[in-house]
Image (cartoon, rainbow, N blue to C red):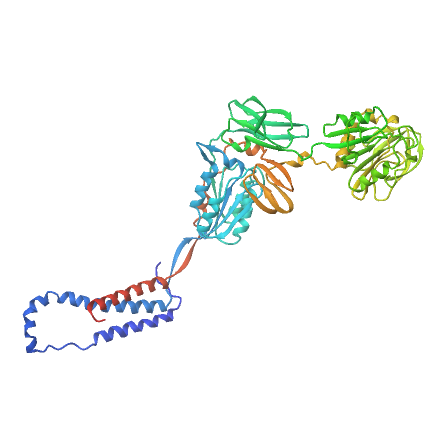
Amino acid sequence: MVALPFARPIGLLALIGALIFIILYLRRPKPQDKVIPSLMFIMQEKKRSTQYSFFQKLMTNLLFLLQLLSILGLGIVAAAPFAKLNYDVTLENTVVILDVSASMQAKEKGISRFDRALGEAKKVLSGRNSIIMAENIPLIVLENENSEIALDVLSKIRPRATTTNLGDSLLLAKDILGDKPGRIVVFSDFVSTEGPDIGVVRAALVSEDKIVEFIDVSNNAKNAGIIKLEVTKYNTKVYIKNFNDAPAQRNIKIVRDGKVITQTKVTIAPNSIENFIFETPAGVSSIELEPKDDLEVDDIAYIATPPKLKNNVLLITNEKSSNLELALGAAKDIELNVVNPPVLTINTKKEKIEPYSHDVIIVYKINNVNKREGIVPGTFDDIESYVEKGGNLMVAAQDDLKEINMKSLPVVDLKSKISKPTKVCVETINQITKQFEKERCFTTAGMYFGADANKNTITFASADDKTPMIVYGEKKKGKIVYYGIFDEASDFKTLPSYPIFWSSMVNFLAGAEDIREFNLKTGKIATISEQSVKTPSSSLKTSKLLMDEAGIYEFDGKKYAVNLLDEKESDISLPSKVESRKEREELIEGQSREHAFNLEFLILIFVFLFMLAEFLYIKRRGDL
């Protein structure tokens, strides 16, 4: 600061008051000495008073000095003085990017990477602060707040169980800064598994004169963990990788309701993968590795199954044995009851059942009402009522199907029977027919009914002449399927795809839920109706749920298992690729600017102190 500039130079005219004060002080009348007899005794103390004359003169001049300084201060304040000083503009705005991904939980000597990052992040806060949590989807948790609030927010952040997206986090930080001066500070182990390349993004930001600092908090943690999980209704396959340069021994335990169902020991070679297959437990269970290592989040994985694993199927047939019965009975996800008309309440195992409580009813080769052991009149009245209330019906073609009174249930208008070979080909690819996507003509039939599909139905498969063979329709709350393949005149019943088709059809009609939908990876965002959701660590009310913790989530009356399962994120032994230099030192000169600091308030403080001292002095002297 070479000079003291003023915002209102005309205010300096107020200093004339100081000049007038000095003139008045110099022109004040001088006291005259007079001899007063009654005071002669005072002369005896003349020698003693002389000793204090200098002090008294000083005190008199001190009062003058205080008054003069007060007047000068007020005069200068009237001119609005300010000082121009160089300062670092990057301290005005600070954007902290805090890596909260799973790898940040890796510990060395009991201290995690996240703990180190958090400690360092608290030291860089200045000016207006913004905080971004770098998960697989960057989250802004604070924007343009003071350091006190930022410290409070940082103290509440915990590491998650997701992958890392530092590239998008940097771009988000750039948007927060905009054209404002500031800096971006990234605290991470730089195990970046998603998003754009951080080196490219960093270079782009530096080219725009943005200050970007990378603080590496990686350590020498070791890990062997679960990287993949294949969950089906019947079996689960777990993959475990050893990321170390030495063999790792792990005890694998399958736990349900706090009890160990099964366990086994494995030795995993360096940088190798081992897998283990076991029967999928019903409900909620977990796979646990022991002993735990430096990264515990991938030492456990959770499994959840749909509330209902098996569908109840009623097969109404007069056949004593059939390929269909064998196919349905072999399906692990089907609970089969077979009944022979006319009695539908006693199954072939002589057990009493409730026929219309089943998820799906299949009518296959039955005797009509006018035949021996035929169905009871009114049976299809009951079936129709069952469907209308939400039941599911499947009717298979048979010779006299056209003569059976099925009420309003048929989804096709049957014509005469056609006895000639034909291919049966898929018309619609869905969860039932997707196995035939590569070879759409999946079987041949020696005879079939000519038929027209009813309005508002869907044809899944048809004959060469486009006659519908498998047709789906709905009746009120229920679903109906016509299966027009005569099994006795087709090779379909002998093909491996036959039991798969029937199992898929039953699951489709019963609305069976895919077990894969209950076993998810962290980082997924679920859109649900607004409700109370139980997460692995807390409960909250939301309509958009970010699953960034590993564990069990509960919503919609169901339980969902969420796991990390990411090989790259679990590989905490990778060396950091970031450079140790800081662009801050390289660009700080270009980011320094002059700032006008107003001095009015500071001078007023001194004026107040001068006036206070004057008041105390006068009071001590006894003039007040």
